Picture 1 (cartoon, rainbow, N blue to C red):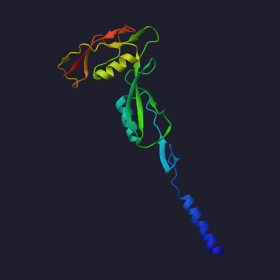
Picture 2 (picture 1 turned 90 degrees about the horizontal axis):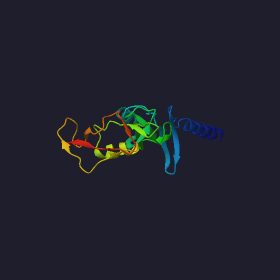
Picture 3 (picture 1 turned 30 degrees about the vertical axis):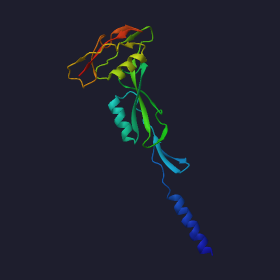
Picture 4 (picture 1 turned 45 degrees about the horizontal axis):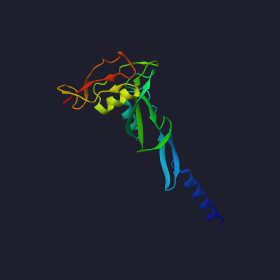
Length: 174
């Protein structure tokens, strides 16, 4: 009887010790259907969209483009923030939204962002995030090296100071 008890205790200890330990930055989260392996969302603030997108994919998540967010401290076009935030445990395969920074002055004037290369909807979101407006009544298409359907010209040059509420015209490539 002692041998059976000792064998059962050894087997239980072995099974407990052979559980799947989490790697650094990883944890096991209990779920109703069992365990979900989760890892921390990487910090991608300040990276380019392409770099951040790759880092999110490499971590096992699905990158998703979010809206533009005004910032006076983060370089325009770089990642402003993510949702969920960096270091939040998340199951692999889940979406991580990337928010892109656009520069904004703290007064009634803003620096005009670069719209070249963005779609019409993306350009409108960028302008809206810093209280500028896009004139969508007449958007001519022109020949350009820029990908089809992307902004290739804007009425106010990038980095120029422009009053909040200004209406911006663009041209897109065909």
